[in-house]
Length: 290
Image 1 (cartoon, rainbow, N blue to C red):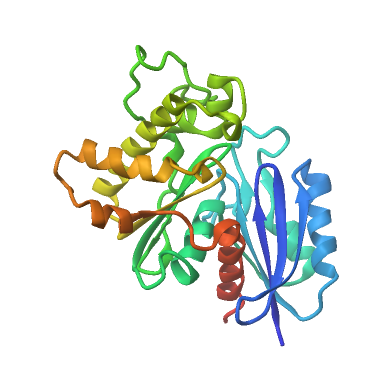
Image 2: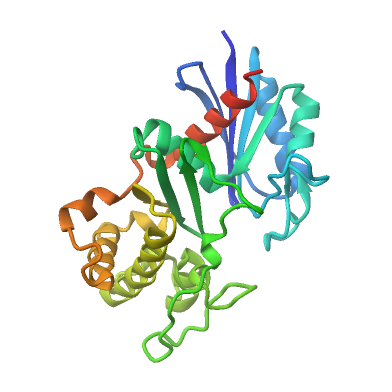
């Protein structure tokens, strides 16, 4: 029986997996994201150990080039991650393994996984927001990942920044105090002097919820998804999603104003840490179909 390869290519680690036709994960390996010259061959080595590989799906950190007609299709482009700008991810995998390679962003991959097998199942428009070291958003619209001129760069939208309440200048190397610059895990680390998981101050988490609520409300009023799924390491804080829900309703000022509907609208990922890998399996399944 054919099996599908999957890579959730993150900025700190690549999670490589193989799955059967039902999407059941058969084997995984975590590879540190060091340099392209070391990380990509390690992924190749993992997949060479599995027979009957039909295709591979890669859900990658970005920004990435998703235009099949572009000379840099399959590349990670202007990433601030040292050593990874302008890296071709697809060609080395396709050449070494001699199988088709599906390619998309890590957040589109997570959104696809949740839309087909998790918290967005049965819905036609789903948004997945990841809040980790950085912030990103992937969207599934009528069953397909949303692409346009490029792909959504939700982490770089502007949100209101009250300098009096929060004098932190932001950490985004491009924009300073965009959403990612104010609310990412890296922003929390720089603002509070410790990783997000070690921040215990309730006021710090209220501020985090404020920025995320502003962003979710913008997403609600623009894309109008049927559900917003919030994942990533920072979002694992026990009370964060509940606080974001409450603040979204406050900011919405009655439009919308239904707490029960908000509880079903803004949720965590049903697949947990497997959202991205599950989506990458789906990317492989699609590219393997003639």
